[in-house]
Each structure stands twice: as structure tokens, then as C-alpha cells.
Image 1 (cartoon, protein in one colour):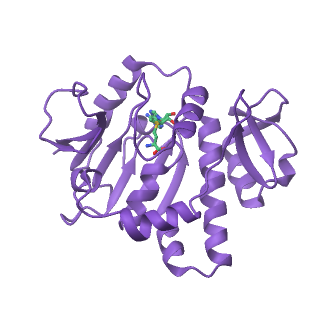
Image 2 (image 1 turned 90 degrees about the horizontal axis):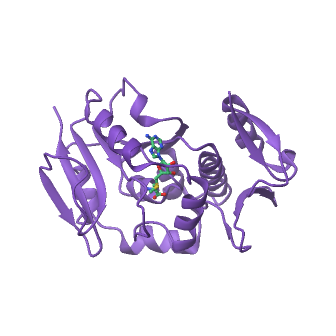
Image 3 (image 1 turned 135 degrees about the horizontal axis):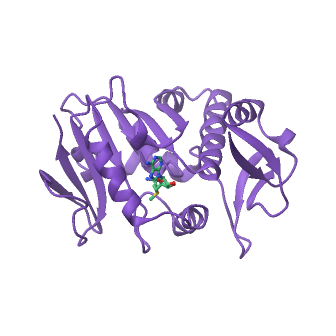
Length: 249
Ligand SMILES: C[S@@+](CC[C@H](N)C(=O)[O-])C[C@H]1O[C@@H](n2cnc3c(N)ncnc32)[C@H](O)[C@@H]1O
């Protein structure tokens, strides 16, 4: 069983969070861990003392889902919005910025995250946001949260994906990139996933191409970067990013 190091009193976490974490990890407490249990939440604390936690229920995300998201955005067009694609595998869930947007647009999203600390932050955010929506009796937000399912593990090692129609792959960039996350969130991810290796990600991309059933594989790239692999069928461009579509099967 993999180990997860948390700093603080784990009993302060939500029971629902602790239950799922204990099923997947041996949890140890360590004052060296940057994952702090604070006021009932899991928080990443950087060496410069700033903090990041996952929360989908904020005034910014409410504004985003009500005002700025739209079907014409390149990510959703690449995934096949309006073309019968309902269920998406987010193979690189990270802190959930992209998967939350997908769920807001009506996709059912299964998000995989293989780095235990990142998964713990994400799970904590998903469960707390769901509870907040219940407490606020916010049916629209509850509907969105009901479409999100986050799991721990390496998505490229899955051999069966029932009902998955599209796969989304957002590899770690060797440099800063723009996207669904703030710069602090990107720095937190880079710090927690410091042992990622470019060659491994190319192999993961190749394995994802052969997962049965999925019709589309979408890879996020900086606008001017080379494609991750041969055979891009179409690129959907934004201001600083593009989404390369590989049509499968
Ligand atoms: C660039 S970040 C993704 C950011 C994400 N799109 C977001 O909006 O928060 C890449 C994340 O994917 C994870 N990852 C990379 N390869 C993976 C795989 N094969 N299976 C599961 N997670 C993976 C890394 O640990 C890292 O947290």
C-alpha cells in the first residue's frame, strides 16, 4: 500500500475524506509534510508560506460557471461536446481545474490522479464542495458535483473503461503554462510531482491511445509546442494553449 504523509491531526479531516484515503493509503503524520490539516481541510503549504487547497465552491467558480464557460471553448469542442460524448476520462486530474469545467458543461468525468498528495488535495476539495452545495441546497452545483468521480491511480494502466467516450491528457509542462489553474496551483503541482519525467509521459500517452472504447483522445499543449505524437486529426486553438485531437477506433 502506498504511503501518504500528512502534517497535523488527521482526525480533523472530514470523515468521508479520511475513509477514502485510508482505503488507498497507509497514512502517516509528519511535521515535514507540506500537506497540512487546517480547519478541517487539506492544504498545501509552500516553503514561501503561501497555501493552496481545492475548493470548487467559491465566488470565482460561481462566476465562471454562470458567465464565462461556453460550448465554443476549444477544450469542449475537442472533447466532442454536442457530438454524443457524455463520459470523459480525465487521465491527469491534478487539482481538478479542467475536470470541474468539464462537469460544469455537462460531461460526466472520471478523474484519475496518480500522485498521492495531489489526489488527497483533490479528493478533499471534491468532498467538501459537495457538502457545501448540500448545505446551501444548491441544486445546480449538486448536479455538477454528482458528475465528478475522482480516483487514485495511473490512468494509463487501466485496461477497461466502461462507457468512456473521450480521454483527456494534460501532461506536466517543463515550464509554466496557462490554463484552468492559478500560478500558485501550478507551482504546488510542480512541487508535489517533482519526479515526473517527460519520457514516461510520452509512454503514458501511447498507452492511453490503445484504451478500448474511447473515440477521442485530447492532449493539452502550449500553443506553439510540438504535438505529443504523430497523427493529430485536428487542433483546437485558444490564446495560449491548444487541444490536439486524436480520433481513436
Ligand atoms: C499538468 S497536471 C494536470 C492539471 C489538471 N488538468 C488541472 O486542471 O488541475 C498533471 C497531473 O496529472 C498527473 N498524472 C500524470 N500522468 C498521470 C497518469 N498516467 N495517471 C494519473 N495521473 C497522472 C500528475 O501527477 C499531475 O498531478
